[in-house]
Structures are given as structure tokens and as C-alpha cells.
Image (tube, rainbow, N blue to C red; front, side, top):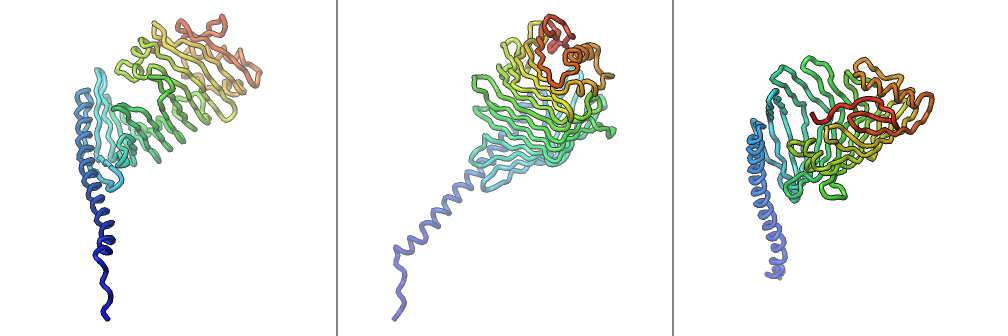
Length: 331
């Protein structure tokens, strides 16, 4: 007796899912190919837009990969050149990766896996290295909505091999604020070090606050536009911490009509004597030294002190007493 042959309906049941899967795969591949072509076009359009603004961007090779679930753009031998009335700057990046999930092109990840170099027409040059350089950007309606930058063990050396800056970690995070045209900012750096640093044992510097009139602040004439738009900074927390002391700062700051910072700052000093006695004041200007002397007088012999400062008329005041002049933010 011959074996029973599979029915036609059974065969259709077997092949139908395979056919559907093949069609879906083909449709997704077409979408990915179109998306890759669109992304390549967008890169060239952005380069053309920067060139109109006086920024020259070029690269030796660009590759788009990541199929099936990512778009990954790799640029090699990337050069960015900017010029102003008095100085030209050129940045060279051997390799840069930009990638996004295929279903969410508004969220970009940018990574620089190798070093980067920069030099000016005046003969200055720098070499940047790190264990990780990574940025996360979220775009909304064609503009930047969220930004996160993470640098692990960043180091900037001069062309002569001297270290201009290094740190254990540096992060910057910018998020939309609760009010229109505002942004929340959180940033910190741990164990920073640079040659002219007046304090050598900094554990961390941390800033958290809100910037209002953000569009004006990020405009081409940033500080002028920020002042004219009534912009201000709400500093929720500023922390400067060493191995033996710390300073906490909070307040609200604006820019006055003469280009000086104005507002009130509340400070909390923990063991201020240890901090002030360790300051190297040889490279500080006279106004900064006067302010330090005044703070030392106000907090002398106290393990914890709370002091309020008023910034007005181009100077720092504590109560009715003028402690020091302030440098102008806008000239």
C-alpha cells in the first residue's frame, strides 16, 4: 500500500509562512537600501550647509553598513576646518562612527574610537585621546532635543607633548525643560587636572541647573541674544569638591545691560580653611585674590559656613561690602 501523499492544503500551510517571511525580508531590505541612500544624501546636504557657514568638511571615504537593524555610517580621514577673522582651526579625525537603529533615525550615536588632532594657522597643535568618546543626540522637528556626551579618560596634549588637560571622566547631559524654550543641564568631571589649575587635588566638579531662552543662548550671537531675550540660568547645584573640603553653590544668574553677570548666589563651605590654604594664587589676578581674602575672612576658623553673595554692577558683594570686580561676559 503506497504512503499517503500530503494534501494540497497542507503544502500551502507549510509554504505560506515562508513566503510571507521572504516578502517581509525583501520589503525590509528595500527600506534599508532606500534609507541608506537617503542618509548618504543627508550627510552631503549637511556638509554643504556647513560650507555656506564657512566650515569646510571633507573625508576620504564614507561607508554605510549595519544591515538589517542599524544604519552605521563610518567616515575615515575626516577633516573639519573653521576660520574666523583672526584664526583658522583644522580638526582631523582618523575614524568616526555615526549609527542609529533602522526604525529610529532621530536618535544618533556618535563615537570616535581613535585619537583626534587639531591645529591652528598660528602654529598651535593638540592631540586628543580617550578610552571612550561617545555622544548621543536626539533630534525633534529638525533640531537638537537631547544631548549626552561621555568621555572616559580624556586627555588633551599640546604639540610639544605637554598635557593641557586630563580627567578620569567627563559627562554632559542636556534635556528639555518643563517650560518652553528651556533646557535642563547636568554635567560633571572627576579628577580633572590642567597645568595652571590653582588646586591640584580636585575630586569632582558638578553642575546642575536650567537655562531659559535656550534658543537665544545657542544662536550665532549667543550671549548678546541671551541677554536681550531676558535669558537666565537657575543653578540648582554647583559642587566643587577636593579630598578635604567642598563648596556648594546655588542661585539665579542673568547678564545685565553692561555685559556683567548679575544675581544672587548661596554658598555652603565645608572646611573652607583647607581649601583656601591650598590655593596657588600666583597665577590669579588681583580681583580674584581679593575675593579669596574676603571669603577667608568671612569663613575663617569655621568647619561649615553659609555665605550669600550678590553679583551686581560688575562686582561681587557680601551684604553692603564690595569684595571684588567681575570680568565682563560681553564686551
